[in-house]
View 1 (cartoon, rainbow, N blue to C red):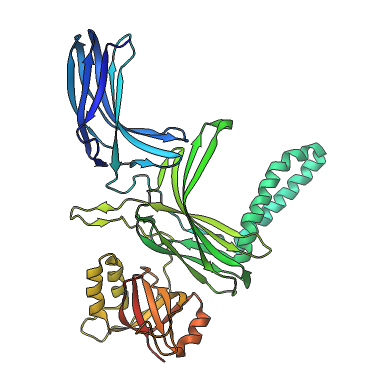
View 2: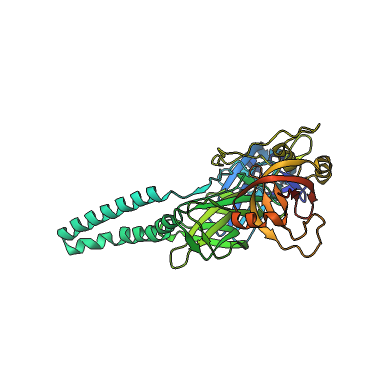
Length: 471
C-alpha cells in the first residue's frame, strides 16, 4: 500500500480556459509513513470518453519533486502547465472530450498514488486538424462511359475464363460482382444521365453563426426530368469502438435540416443549371472534430431525385472552425477560397461609372461582403452608393411573393427576386419591372446581366437592393 495521498487544487477550477494558455494550481501530498518518491509528475492532457476508442494527447508535463517524504508531512507543490490548443472541451451523446491535470507519485515497489482534476477549454484559433473541403465534381459522360465499358469488358472476359475453369470458381466472383453492380447503379447511371454535376461552397471553413451559400451546377447533355433536388444539412457524432471483427461504428445525429432546392422540373439540354446551397450554422454549433476513431462531422447531402432511375447523391463535407481573434480584438475566420472555384472566362465587363466616386459594382459588392456583419458600416456604404447605376450580373435564386405595395421599391405589375453576385456571393434583391418578366421566367436560376440602380439594403435578410432599369 502507498503511504501517501495526492490531491490537485486548480487556481481557477470554474473558468473556461483558452486553448494555448496555461493552467496553474498545486498538488497536495499527505504522507502517513516514511516514503521515498522517485518523481512527482504532473501533466496537462486531453482524453476522449464515451462509446468510441479512447484518443488522448499531452500538452505538457513537469516533475515537481523527487526525494524523501516523512510520516505526518503535508506538502504542497505549485505547477504551471501549457494547455493544448486543440481539441476544445465537448460533451455530447456518444463523444465527450475533457482536459485534465494528472498527478502521479512514483513510489518504488508500491502502487503509484494518482490524482486528476478536469478543466474546461475553449479554442482561440482555427483547428489545427481542419481538413480542406474539396468541391464535389462528377466525371463527364464520356469518361464515365469509357470506364464503365472497360470494367464491363474486363468482367465479361474474367467470367468467361472462370466458367471454363469450372462452375464452382464462379463463387469467387460473387463479391466483386455485387460491388460492381452497386457502383454501376449508384454512381455510373446517375452521372451518365445528368452529365457534369458540381457542388461547392465559396469558402472551405465556416464559423458558428455564419451563413454561406454554395452552388450546385448541373449541365445535362440531353433534357432530363427530375422529381426535385434537396439538400440535407446534418451534423453527427461518429465513434468507433473495438477493432478487427469486433469493430463497431456508433452514430448519433444531433442536427438535421432538409431544404428543397428545386421542385419537379425538366433540366434543359446543354444548359448549365445553377442551384444555390444556403447553409446557416447555429450560433452554438460545435466544431468539426477528427480524433482517430472519434469524429464530429458536418455535411450537406445533395440529392437529385430522378424518376424511375437511381438518384444522384453526394455528401459534401463542411468544416466548422472557431473564429480567430486578432490582436485588435476583431473576430474573423481564416478564409481559403476553394481551389476549384471556376474563373469565368466571360466575366461581365463593367463600364466605368461617370461619377466622381468612380466605384464599380464589383468593388461595391466586395466592400459590402467584407463588412456584412457590421451594420453601421454597411449602412454608411449603402447610403454612399444609393442612387448609383451599374451594370449588374447575378445568379437568380427564386422569385419572392410580395403582397400589394408592401415594398416601396416594387414596380407596378413587377416583382422581386432573390439572387447573388458570383464572387463574392453577396445576396441581392432585384426589383424586376413588368417588361423583364418574360426574360426572368426563361432564365430560371442561371446568370442574368443587365443594368440596375442601388436603392437600399435589406437588413432582415442581409441583401443589397437593386432596382432594374426598364427597357
